[in-house]
Amino acid sequence: MEKIFEKDLHQWLEHVRIYANNGKVADYIPALANQQPEINAVAYYPIGDEVMKAGQFEYTFTLQSISKVLTLALALVQHGEKAVFSRVGKEPSSDPFYSVAKLEVNTPAKPFNPMINAGALAVTNMIRGRDSEEMVEEILKLVRLLTDDPSITYDEEVAKSEFETAFLNRALCYFMKQHGIITGSVEELLDVYTKQCAININVQKLARIAAVFANDGRDPDTNNPLIPLHVARICKTFMVTCGMYDASGTFAINVGIPAKSGVSGAIMGVLKKNGGIAVFGPALDKKGNSVVGMQLLEKLAEEKRWSMF
Image (cartoon, rainbow, N blue to C red):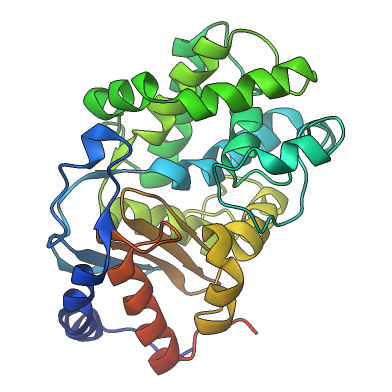
């Protein structure tokens, strides 16, 4: 893989800004509808080197579906593979991330993978804690560890907005509860899930998380182990097969790296043994991925020969 320079990031971000006009900010979560599509940023966090960034890199946004990778890692650390994959599958789904359809054809209503909403809810349900507050704190503890930032927390306004409008996620939860995939209070689970999705971050911190995965679970600066190698490997595999919603196959061909997107407009990408990259642009395509982020990653992948294939 060819080396990335800060001038590359500035150059390509300027080149792809215009694509924001081709997308639409997520409005089904009221608090996200206020985001400005012209805000764009990118950061590259190389292993053992200085971070590079361009655009409005200090702007904070919420993790949304990118948090699914982190709760999966936490559940695997806390319970192991056998327990986690007894509740959720390992196969890609061709349906949208919010789909109910596949739950009805699978027995016993086991979600296809942890990157769709149903699977992520089943995984979050496994996080340890006596109540939702303790479960959220466990998730925050992991995010703070990976970002090396003890101040990381969630956006209360976004969490409240998501909780109050989470009717489809409630339906997924009750369907899975009927079949024993999730246990306990649905409202408490949704409280945890909406707060994990509302964790506030910027591109530099997100790129650092990606760099941990690029470094096989080790800190990109100190090389100290933060998450087990096998857990990092499983998470990266899911990012390749399911990380970009139902555009994951196209992304694998066009870019060819493990990546995860969120409807806030963020994408994190993993460049094995090299570093992590994070892009933010809130205007989304029809699949729910940042249009600026997708264009930027495709341009850089082509120029720098990123593809793992």
